[in-house]
Structures are given as structure tokens and as C-alpha cells.
Image (cartoon, rainbow, N blue to C red; front, side, top):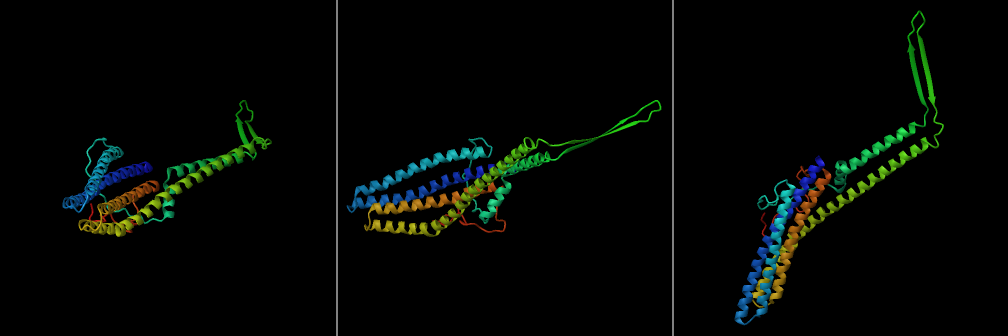
Length: 317
């Protein structure tokens, strides 16, 4: 029951974070639309003054329309993710849902060895295989007992009347395993083969479980490093680059294509940042389901990607 509950919690979290990302993507697209609108206004001014070309105006407008297309696709995703979240939570598919607010980053200070150990300890599949091994070992022990003679002792009592003495009867029977080569030995071999097969299946199950845990753990660690890279390096530099590009375009020192490219780079970095943040949380949710735990880090230690603040504005959405 605990394993099933953890899986349900994981499904709810996955749908929640996907829904959050869809909303957040629309926010980012709207912000970048405003930048393209500024480029469009500047292009129209330059074209009106004879210092620019109409093609630059069209380029800026085209980028705006492409963003509108992406926004519509995200709205469709919102509808799908709302239905998935309601279904995972046991609600009506069309039940109304508000906009999700991203909680603080989930701490995950556990080492890979600790995660693998907890996963094996709580895995229903591993427990099932262990029970099968215990049963196979019991069969081997029972089969080996057939090598020993089967000794039977019996006693009987016969009361008599008419002055005769009561009678007692004692029997002692020994059943010798004279056919052990064709019967008992084969039974033991069969039981041992079943035991070996059960052990192999357990080893395979543990290997697959460890592989799945390692994949999720690597995702958590890699996402944490990328979050830091985007937040502290790429996004602030891209913001500066966009501001500088806009000033240079208005002054006529660069063309519209260069300015638009800088805005698109910032858009990509923003989307990648939030995507990695969500992927980290989803990977942690999956690991918790595998480990059979609700949370890690009661000591207050934080994993990589320590907060969910907007890297561009420094605010929590």
C-alpha cells in the first residue's frame, strides 16, 4: 500500500510541475513579445526616417507571430496537464484548477549509495524476489532431508477381558532411500536450480533498479549545475546583451537580425532554465517514489539549484 501511495504522489507531482512549466513558458513568451514589439517600433521609426528597411519591420512582426503560435500550443498543454493532474488526484477530469505556484526547491542531500540502498529496501519487486528465494531455499532443505532414512515408531494397546492380560504392540519401521540417485538427487537438483534462478532474477531486478536510480540521480545533479549556470552566468549576460543590442539598433550600429538573435538567445536561456528546474523536481519526485520516502533533508541541507527565483528579475513567481 505504501508503494502504491508513493507512486500516486509521484504522478501528482509530475503533472503539477508540467502544468507549472506550461504557465511559466507563457509568461516568458509574453515578456519576450514585449521586446520584439520594441524592436518593431524601432524598425518602423527607422523605416519612416529612411535609415532602415521595411524587411526589418517584417522580421520583428514575424517573430511576434511565432511567439503567439507557441503560446497557443502551451495553452493546449495546460488543458492536457490539468486533466492529468485531476485524474492523478482522483478528481473529475474537468474540475477547475487554479494556477500552480512553484514551491521552494526540494532538498536532496542523499548520496547515490544511500538512494540505491533505500530503493532496494523499499522496492516491492525486490521484496517479492527475496520471498521467492526464501521459498526456494526451503524447498532445497526439504529435498535434502529425503536423503536421510525415514524412521517411524508406532505403539498400540489392546485391552482384553475374561481374565486375560492386556496386550501392547510396539513397531519400529525404517524407510531407506535406496533410490536416491534417481529420485532424491534429482529432486535436490531441481530445487537448487529453482533457487539459482530466483537469485538471478533478484540480481537482475536490483541491477535494473540501481540503473533507474542512477539515471534519476544524475538528472538531479546535472540539472542543479545547469540551473546555477543559467541563473548566475548565461541569463544575466544575455539580458545585458539584449539591452546593449537594442541601444545599438536604435542608434543604427547593428541590424535588426542581430538584435532579434540576441532576444531569441535570451528566450532560449530562460526556457532552458525553467525546464531544468522542473526536470530536477520531477526527477526527485520519481526517486522518492522508488525510495519509498516523502522527503530527504530534515537537517536543512540543500541540493543543487537552491531556489526557484526568477533569474532575470530575482523574484519568486
